[in-house]
Length: 519
Image (cartoon, rainbow, N blue to C red):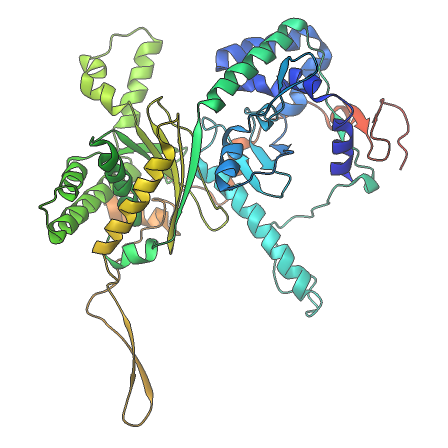
């Protein structure tokens, strides 16, 4: 009923008027510009200030999109930046009716499309991917458990049906039938702010038109086969992307991968650069027509081993890039002269990241992605599965689909050089009994690698093993997600429940405060 009430209320206003008043578009502006516009909105009226406080105090924003993506590529693009849908009225003045106007980028956004597809969009400065992943995982797991409980509770006397709930809390689901009435937040916007909304939308639309997203879901092999060949899955995937770019453009380019440092108190990430000397040797050897398969495999192994070693350095606080960047920021803020190193060609090329990549995912996610960080770059989010590799690739129209096809062929060719390192045999003895023997010629390469470094089941123990020093301060078992995102709400509960206008599904109209709402 709540959804019905919201949908009915949305039809009361023409779409072109809704577009012109899409305040959330201002959150796509550069921070200083949005801050200035926000101050002007607040100074216009106390009502506006209170409405923004309500939004600020929310843990997340639920986005309901009237969009049905035709394929996985459109779905990924909608979750990243929304759709572009330019329309005209009788006077031929265009207005933006796409879902790009239905966003509030200051907040964590849970996005649901009209066909039931759901995703999450978050601004990176506040949290890292694995913090949002924790929320998504709990939501997904809770739905699975609720379904299992609905099946088994008719069989077992336990009210949970033998499946304990994911969230140990008394959850009361809201509906209009128990006096939970949705309220619409309205704003008093001067013409100057309406103009800023329009110009912010046209600028955002330029960015969307110039962007392209393509999804590659590779099913040839995945983590299982790579691990059996004594290689790190993450290092293998990282090198595949560098090789695909080299194969397409003939250049070794700067490639970035974040490494979690959450084993440290308040830790975020450290930077790992995949374009090492070993990686360059691997790419050049691979493209050498005279190189043997044995030599190609040898350079691949050497490059993955070296990459994994550098990952361990970053994981245990031995990285240098974040430290150097912090020093430069401090110097710039205090007008302190920086060494020539920071203006060198090498440092400039290092920070012009053509391949910005990140690994974040588990069975609750189908895709993970983000945009490029430079105009001539690619943004590549990937998920490593046991028997597959999923990529979401974005660029500013740099032949994104062609790069994805090149990457797919590269993975196929790399897979031809690696074979399962163990096998299972079924034999029959003379007595007719079946014996199952496993070839123990080689052992599986496990070495405590998880899909994402530092997020294994016992990461605190691995620190001492890797570094030989006292492990950093461990994280508490309490929800890091809530700790990071919690914001003190300055509005009392009474003010919060009384602010805004009631809307009802039956009449489709809004009720003024103090009026009775027909049930």
